[in-house]
Every structure is written in C-alpha cells, then in structure tokens.
Length: 95
Image (cartoon, rainbow, N blue to C red):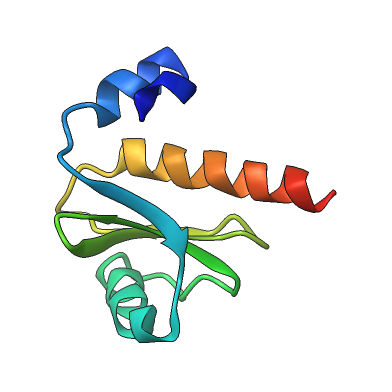
C-alpha cells in the first residue's frame, strides 16, 4: 500500500494496521458531528472524505472547502495528509 505514497508519509502510516480513506456515507454523520464537537468547529461541508482506523472515523475533510476535523485524542497528522492527497487525486480526475 505505501509504495505509492511520498516516503515520509509512507513511514508514518506503515505502523497502522488498517486505514480506510473513503467518501462519507449518511451513516457517518454522527461520527463527523462528534469530531466537529470535540474540536469546537463546524461540520465540514459536503462532499466529505473520512479517515477510518481501528474501526473508528478519526478525521474528516471537506473536498469542497478543505476544512478538516479530527479526533484531538489521537495522532491523525498522517491521516489528514492521506485525506488531502486523496482529495487532490479526486479533483485531478474531475478536471
């Protein structure tokens, strides 16, 4: 999985057992609201990508505004970098 990532990011994510970067689904709304509440921010505008690890959504990124909310009790810098990378890929595909 990490062979297509920049080297520094690949080293960071290599220690995680499972990561899912995906489009948010309707059932994710409560988890995204929870993240926004934890960091006292508004819920990111749709469309949203989420980063899920260990069965929990720990970061969310609006692909339209680039606003991010994360779980402040977990290390999420590498996951936010993955969300930004995937968002850029999706924008490039749409162009």
